[in-house]
Image 1 (tube, rainbow, N blue to C red):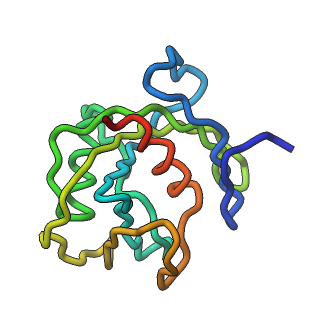
Image 2: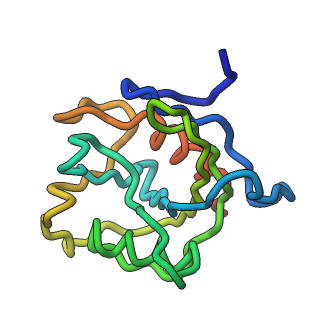
Length: 157
């Protein structure tokens, strides 16, 4: 059994988190996704993904020609209405995903932000919340993302 940081009910595993200061190169698998851990007053921003029916970090696929930072900024705005231009690169997450346990990486960014009322539900995201880490939410919470949110917080001043 692999050592890991977190796992979910679908068999996805967070294998490792490499903080930005580590000189780790992403060489053995694709860097496909950027995720954002946005913090306010000890609360983590989570978005409710309609398709996966769970609370997760805002983020998504890095489009062709887009840098991981550009993807993080775009996805954060599309999914939560938050516009944060000074994201801090927190590190890389290494996953084993799906039944075939394919290895993929995600770029993880973090920032402090002030909640606003710019969120509007869309085809992908039905709700957002600033979660305190303990209160019960309606629907399941993605444990890999919560783990990453906490790890990414360490990169913030």
